[in-house]
Length: 232
Image (cartoon, rainbow, N blue to C red; front, side, top):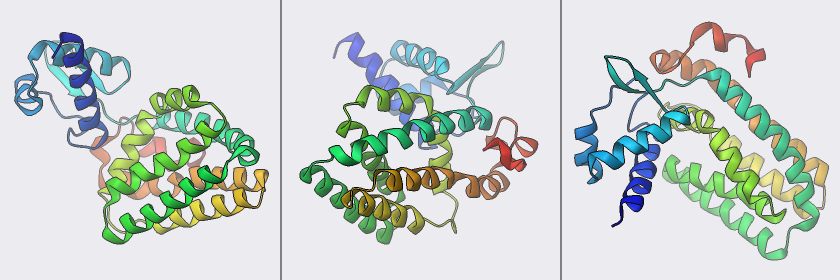
């Protein structure tokens, strides 16, 4: 394996560990433990941490060490705001362009999500959710925009994975809204599908308080920042 491939592998591995809460917000990093965990040398790991620090996933504290960055809900809100407004337009543009095969793919993803939901496999449910949304960007040839939004919404993704660990939050509402989006797309109702997307991305608002109450130590500016509903 080349040095470049090792750096990419370390980057992908560490990023996944942060996003999926294998590395907890605020946790101090032991690079040698990560070396053993990932099976990659210390130098690629250091390079990966530098990259991920730029993306807001790690903090370096002088004379203390490297820490997993806490979730910044202001950044989360801004990223979600950008995605909501862009995705509303993308969805409306995509509806008249969707092919029969793409509609079939959307319905297949709905079936998969239903299976994952019943099985309680929320990690796979989350990934199928992302595939569902990405398809609308593919239909409009805006995959670069999707990838940019994915980077912009890293804090949003961290929050959503943290939500997976909290029992009692409703996941069937996500599936219900996805079904409504597909139904409106099949009917050619571009504006209706776009309106459901907006409601869909607003669902995180209802989850902020219970997640924050359960894991206040994971957030950069916990209480005041999120009790004001205007933030999100």
